[in-house]
Image (cartoon, rainbow, N blue to C red; front, side, top):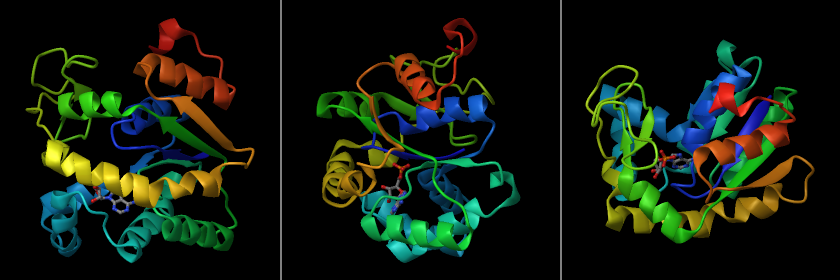
Length: 222
Ligand code: AMP
Protein backbone atom coordinates (compact mmCIF):
# COMPACT_ATOMS: atom_id res chain seq x y z
CA UNK A 1 0.00 0.00 0.00
CA UNK A 2 1.55 3.29 -1.12
CA UNK A 3 -0.18 6.31 0.34
CA UNK A 4 0.29 10.06 0.01
CA UNK A 5 -0.98 12.27 2.85
CA UNK A 6 -1.81 15.79 1.73
CA UNK A 7 -2.98 18.71 3.82
CA UNK A 8 -1.91 21.89 5.55
CA UNK A 9 0.57 21.96 8.44
CA UNK A 10 -1.29 21.00 11.61
CA UNK A 11 -4.02 19.01 9.85
CA UNK A 12 -2.85 15.83 11.60
CA UNK A 13 -0.91 14.12 8.80
CA UNK A 14 1.96 13.01 11.04
CA UNK A 15 -0.33 11.74 13.80
CA UNK A 16 -2.50 9.85 11.32
CA UNK A 17 0.56 8.44 9.57
CA UNK A 18 1.93 7.13 12.87
CA UNK A 19 -1.32 5.21 13.42
CA UNK A 20 -1.50 3.89 9.88
CA UNK A 21 2.09 2.67 10.15
CA UNK A 22 1.02 0.26 12.88
CA UNK A 23 -2.08 -0.85 11.00
CA UNK A 24 -0.38 -1.38 7.64
CA UNK A 25 3.16 -2.28 8.76
CA UNK A 26 4.74 0.06 6.22
CA UNK A 27 7.15 2.92 7.04
CA UNK A 28 6.17 6.57 7.40
CA UNK A 29 8.35 8.71 5.13
CA UNK A 30 8.02 12.15 6.71
CA UNK A 31 10.04 14.62 4.65
CA UNK A 32 10.22 17.15 7.50
CA UNK A 33 11.49 14.51 9.96
CA UNK A 34 14.14 13.36 7.48
CA UNK A 35 15.37 16.94 6.98
CA UNK A 36 15.36 17.70 10.73
CA UNK A 37 17.38 14.56 11.39
CA UNK A 38 19.96 15.67 8.80
CA UNK A 39 20.17 19.05 10.53
CA UNK A 40 20.69 17.37 13.91
CA UNK A 41 23.45 15.21 12.44
CA UNK A 42 25.14 18.31 10.97
CA UNK A 43 25.42 16.68 7.53
CA UNK A 44 26.04 18.70 4.34
CA UNK A 45 22.38 18.26 3.46
CA UNK A 46 21.37 19.41 6.93
CA UNK A 47 23.48 22.55 6.65
CA UNK A 48 22.04 23.29 3.20
CA UNK A 49 18.39 22.99 4.26
CA UNK A 50 18.51 24.54 7.73
CA UNK A 51 17.82 28.10 6.57
CA UNK A 52 14.67 26.95 4.73
CA UNK A 53 13.24 25.11 7.72
CA UNK A 54 14.05 27.97 10.09
CA UNK A 55 12.17 30.47 7.95
CA UNK A 56 9.25 28.22 7.01
CA UNK A 57 10.22 28.27 3.32
CA UNK A 58 10.11 25.15 1.19
CA UNK A 59 13.38 23.41 0.42
CA UNK A 60 14.14 23.55 -3.35
CA UNK A 61 12.33 20.85 -5.31
CA UNK A 62 15.47 19.23 -6.72
CA UNK A 63 16.88 18.67 -3.21
CA UNK A 64 13.77 17.18 -1.63
CA UNK A 65 12.94 15.06 -4.68
CA UNK A 66 16.37 13.44 -4.57
CA UNK A 67 16.10 12.78 -0.83
CA UNK A 68 12.60 11.31 -0.97
CA UNK A 69 12.99 9.20 -4.12
CA UNK A 70 16.13 7.60 -2.73
CA UNK A 71 14.31 7.00 0.57
CA UNK A 72 11.37 5.23 -1.06
CA UNK A 73 13.76 2.96 -2.95
CA UNK A 74 15.11 1.54 0.35
CA UNK A 75 14.33 -2.14 1.01
CA UNK A 76 11.95 -1.36 3.92
CA UNK A 77 9.62 0.33 1.42
CA UNK A 78 9.16 -2.75 -0.77
CA UNK A 79 5.69 -3.48 0.66
CA UNK A 80 4.66 0.18 0.60
CA UNK A 81 5.01 3.43 2.49
CA UNK A 82 3.15 6.47 3.72
CA UNK A 83 4.42 9.74 2.28
CA UNK A 84 3.89 12.48 4.84
CA UNK A 85 4.82 15.98 3.64
CA UNK A 86 5.95 14.98 0.16
CA UNK A 87 5.10 15.90 -2.55
CA UNK A 88 4.38 19.52 -1.69
CA UNK A 89 4.60 21.24 -5.08
CA UNK A 90 3.50 20.40 -8.59
CA UNK A 91 7.07 19.78 -9.84
CA UNK A 92 7.60 17.41 -6.88
CA UNK A 93 4.43 15.47 -7.76
CA UNK A 94 5.49 15.26 -11.40
CA UNK A 95 8.98 14.08 -10.43
CA UNK A 96 7.46 11.46 -8.12
CA UNK A 97 5.18 10.20 -10.90
CA UNK A 98 8.10 9.98 -13.34
CA UNK A 99 10.14 7.98 -10.82
CA UNK A 100 7.23 5.67 -10.10
CA UNK A 101 6.86 4.94 -13.81
CA UNK A 102 10.56 4.07 -13.95
CA UNK A 103 10.18 1.86 -10.87
CA UNK A 104 7.04 0.27 -12.37
CA UNK A 105 5.22 1.28 -9.22
CA UNK A 106 2.26 3.50 -8.39
CA UNK A 107 0.48 5.38 -5.61
CA UNK A 108 -2.56 3.46 -4.35
CA UNK A 109 -4.23 6.17 -2.32
CA UNK A 110 -4.09 9.92 -1.75
CA UNK A 111 -5.63 11.03 1.57
CA UNK A 112 -6.32 14.73 1.89
CA UNK A 113 -6.73 15.99 5.45
CA UNK A 114 -8.68 19.20 5.35
CA UNK A 115 -8.80 21.43 8.46
CA UNK A 116 -10.03 24.92 9.33
CA UNK A 117 -7.56 27.73 10.04
CA UNK A 118 -8.43 27.99 13.75
CA UNK A 119 -7.98 24.22 14.24
CA UNK A 120 -4.59 24.40 12.53
CA UNK A 121 -3.40 27.30 14.67
CA UNK A 122 -4.50 25.60 17.90
CA UNK A 123 -2.86 22.29 16.88
CA UNK A 124 0.45 23.93 15.98
CA UNK A 125 0.64 26.15 19.04
CA UNK A 126 0.02 23.18 21.37
CA UNK A 127 2.18 20.71 19.43
CA UNK A 128 5.12 19.13 21.24
CA UNK A 129 7.54 16.73 19.59
CA UNK A 130 10.14 14.25 20.74
CA UNK A 131 13.53 15.25 19.31
CA UNK A 132 14.70 11.63 19.59
CA UNK A 133 11.93 9.55 17.96
CA UNK A 134 9.78 12.30 16.33
CA UNK A 135 6.63 11.23 18.21
CA UNK A 136 4.09 14.05 18.22
CA UNK A 137 1.91 15.18 21.13
CA UNK A 138 -0.46 18.03 21.89
CA UNK A 139 -0.62 19.63 25.31
CA UNK A 140 -4.43 19.22 25.46
CA UNK A 141 -5.51 16.75 22.77
CA UNK A 142 -2.72 14.15 22.86
CA UNK A 143 -0.86 14.72 26.14
CA UNK A 144 2.05 12.45 27.09
CA UNK A 145 1.58 10.22 30.17
CA UNK A 146 4.19 12.27 32.06
CA UNK A 147 3.94 15.99 31.25
CA UNK A 148 6.82 17.14 29.03
CA UNK A 149 8.28 13.63 28.50
CA UNK A 150 8.04 11.30 25.52
CA UNK A 151 6.02 8.13 26.27
CA UNK A 152 8.40 6.02 24.18
CA UNK A 153 11.86 7.11 25.33
CA UNK A 154 11.36 9.63 28.14
CA UNK A 155 13.12 12.41 26.19
CA UNK A 156 12.23 16.04 26.98
CA UNK A 157 9.54 17.19 24.54
CA UNK A 158 10.10 20.42 22.61
CA UNK A 159 8.07 22.91 20.57
CA UNK A 160 9.24 23.01 16.97
CA UNK A 161 10.84 26.41 16.30
CA UNK A 162 8.86 26.64 13.05
CA UNK A 163 5.60 26.34 15.02
CA UNK A 164 6.21 29.93 16.21
CA UNK A 165 3.33 32.14 14.98
CA UNK A 166 5.33 34.25 12.49
CA UNK A 167 6.88 31.14 10.86
CA UNK A 168 3.47 29.41 10.83
CA UNK A 169 2.11 32.32 8.79
CA UNK A 170 4.81 31.76 6.15
CA UNK A 171 4.21 28.00 6.12
CA UNK A 172 0.45 28.43 5.66
CA UNK A 173 1.00 30.96 2.89
CA UNK A 174 3.38 28.53 1.13
CA UNK A 175 0.81 25.79 1.57
CA UNK A 176 -1.91 27.89 -0.08
CA UNK A 177 0.33 29.02 -2.92
CA UNK A 178 2.39 25.90 -3.68
CA UNK A 179 0.73 22.83 -2.18
CA UNK A 180 -2.98 23.47 -2.67
CA UNK A 181 -2.66 23.17 -6.47
CA UNK A 182 -1.77 19.52 -5.84
CA UNK A 183 -5.37 18.90 -4.78
CA UNK A 184 -6.45 19.48 -8.38
CA UNK A 185 -3.57 17.34 -9.60
CA UNK A 186 -4.71 14.37 -7.53
CA UNK A 187 -8.47 15.05 -7.25
CA UNK A 188 -10.82 13.49 -9.74
CA UNK A 189 -8.83 10.30 -9.65
CA UNK A 190 -10.54 7.35 -7.90
CA UNK A 191 -7.73 7.02 -5.40
CA UNK A 192 -8.21 10.56 -3.91
CA UNK A 193 -10.17 10.88 -0.64
CA UNK A 194 -10.87 13.86 1.58
CA UNK A 195 -10.88 13.32 5.36
CA UNK A 196 -12.24 15.78 7.90
CA UNK A 197 -9.11 16.91 9.74
CA UNK A 198 -11.17 19.03 12.16
CA UNK A 199 -12.20 15.86 14.02
CA UNK A 200 -10.08 14.34 16.74
CA UNK A 201 -7.42 11.87 15.74
CA UNK A 202 -9.43 8.74 16.60
CA UNK A 203 -12.23 9.86 14.28
CA UNK A 204 -9.81 10.81 11.52
CA UNK A 205 -8.21 7.41 11.89
CA UNK A 206 -11.59 5.68 11.63
CA UNK A 207 -12.35 7.67 8.48
CA UNK A 208 -9.02 6.55 7.03
CA UNK A 209 -9.71 2.92 7.93
CA UNK A 210 -13.06 3.11 6.18
CA UNK A 211 -11.32 4.37 3.08
CA UNK A 212 -8.77 1.59 3.38
CA UNK A 213 -11.61 -0.88 3.71
CA UNK A 214 -10.21 -1.99 7.05
CA UNK A 215 -12.59 -3.19 9.75
CA UNK A 216 -10.84 -2.63 13.04
CA UNK A 217 -12.50 -2.50 16.43
CA UNK A 218 -12.19 0.97 18.04
CA UNK A 219 -11.40 -0.79 21.34
CA UNK A 220 -8.28 -2.38 19.83
CA UNK A 221 -7.17 0.61 17.88
CA UNK A 222 -7.91 3.82 19.77
P1 AMP B 1 6.97 19.46 8.05
O1 AMP B 1 7.61 18.70 9.17
O2 AMP B 1 6.32 18.55 7.01
O3 AMP B 1 6.03 20.54 8.52
O4 AMP B 1 8.16 20.18 7.26
C1 AMP B 1 9.00 21.09 7.90
C2 AMP B 1 9.79 21.88 6.89
O5 AMP B 1 10.61 21.00 6.11
C3 AMP B 1 8.98 22.65 5.87
O6 AMP B 1 8.54 23.92 6.36
C4 AMP B 1 10.00 22.81 4.75
O7 AMP B 1 10.98 23.78 5.06
C5 AMP B 1 10.71 21.46 4.76
N1 AMP B 1 10.02 20.48 3.91
C6 AMP B 1 9.42 19.32 4.32
N2 AMP B 1 8.89 18.67 3.26
C7 AMP B 1 9.15 19.42 2.18
C8 AMP B 1 8.84 19.29 0.79
N3 AMP B 1 8.16 18.24 0.32
N4 AMP B 1 9.26 20.28 -0.04
C9 AMP B 1 9.97 21.32 0.40
N5 AMP B 1 10.28 21.52 1.69
C10 AMP B 1 9.87 20.57 2.59
